Image (cartoon, rainbow, N blue to C red; front, side, top):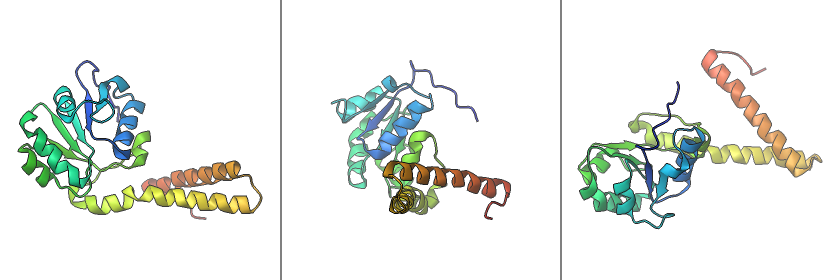
Length: 191
């Protein structure tokens, strides 16, 4: 599927608060060429308050904790309009809650993980988000731990740490491609 660039003069993304998820989304948007960096702004890093960012941008990503999002959405409720797209990356907050607090049905709920920064993301129905978040949100940490353990084994066998990490990462990456071929094309690679 081809992703068409969004005209820079008519489209901007504002992040209400920031964190690892917001950073992953922003990096992915820029790396894919969908949007240039000068069309992305955050309420925190630009020293603009939430209202200023919210009013200036057509797409607003609420990258806040569960504790903060209700306050942020309620605070901005009077500024909502049908021409704004609202995106929530708050874990555990359902679309129904967001729509109730905002009085709008323009919310999209996403739960990216760090691979979103390199364009590797997936989608699922909201009813599965809690399970998806547990698997995909925490999954990268387990993969990193496995790579580190493989590298530790290489170091114990006499390899320099940098080489061991490179080999372990390459091994995992190569076998992920094989696994996807097995999954999608029924190709047997186990032996």
